[in-house]
Length: 596
Image 1 (cartoon, one colour):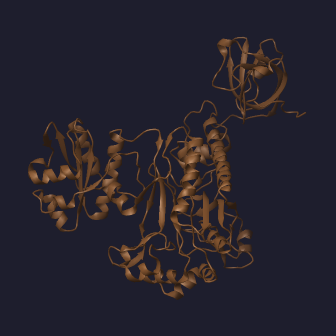
Image 2: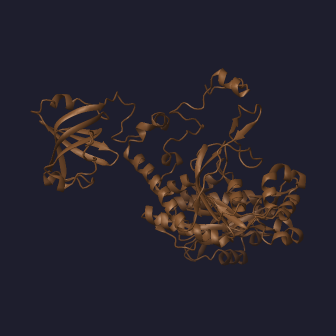
Image 3: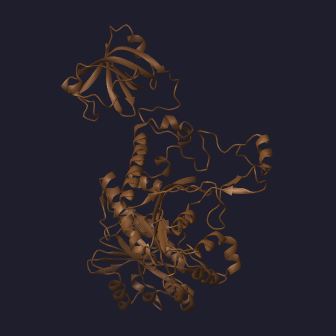
């Protein structure tokens, strides 16, 4: 029999009453009820209440034992008094009367409490992450992550996918974010790179004749932290499929996501197929290619309505290339004057950068607002028709250079949704953003470059590259978005060397440059490559949504801080001179460096 426990701290039930048991765990909480002392003992599986009477020979020693000591107890299971049942825990109908105990792992004074879970500075939590992980909320979230990962493997395997592992030490990529470099001891002056993604390897697996690949893949990018992006490393659900079209990839992800979100969340989930929104439509209606569809506000283009209008501020800007975006808000006319003034102050702040924010209010048959008196009845009618106005509605207007107007309108849409409580609660709203432009022009030089993924297949193939203006060519590239969070980008790949050379030629690359930078892929594609495509949803971000967390660090067991430091393991840090000598490298630390 195991010397440490006959049961876990989450196992005992009323059917165990009368049994002699051994339990081990952490001293979670304690309560002195005047001659009767209660302890909550916690392990990975749950909490069991222990009780000891004042006549026990070890009563004083046990009552002075501080929280988080690891102890083992032996005792008998008893029924709790009905008025003391605890329905919040599985063991809430029973308790164990302690007959003997011993300390397995003594605990020194804690830097912060495990229970109660008071607010603690994140830097301190990360420094003692092992202690932080004992807290029930974080512990549950990490267990959720494990369950989600297991479900993903189960679901994808059922769909005919095979799990592969791809190299961690690989070659530096000429495209994308900064690489993490690893010096080679055996090849002085040369470096490996940690993979930003298994992109080339998974495509090569398709060329090698495998059909459906997946991997819970570690990825490494030397980039700054964000609330929804972890610095240094992250995990993605990496997929690739041979002989597929765009809709085949969509079907796999929709099956996976509807299952995951229905299994691990009680919120409403969109049914498949998810809505498809062309990129240009998303930028017009929402000001972003990551739209939060819980927000009902749809942006309209009213540039032509204001072109040559009596409102000279807008009309003059339009003559110099500006556009107008309108944001109709339903039944918002009863907001006080201070609300509209507050919106203007916020929009013109340095945070947003608008030159102004105009608005019109339709209320009881009248139109009010700062610009109401300068617009003709004809213009008013055009605005009303374009924005589908009914009585009680309000329309806000943004006028600026195209990209800036789009960005500001997106921020105004989000702000209005939040302030007016328009965001639909308790739901997940998914969409696919499709039909991304293959190319874009530099605003200053006019030079043509790839707008997103240069290895996506252009819609129309070689014919489109040869006969369609570059800025009109669309790519088989797609993003999946949920509640304003981009969960993944993907594409049908360009597997044809001739089409790839032509696409890169339009972007200003010679065939020799393509061979030099992407020779391995080109060589593989010249030896018989199938049509293929894939996607790679971020595992961390998926769990963040399912756990209803606001920060990725809350779903990662041992995350770095925002400065890409591991405070628990004290990394990164200098290494011994001998290690540098073995690698044939020297370091040059910038003056004034205060990282150490």
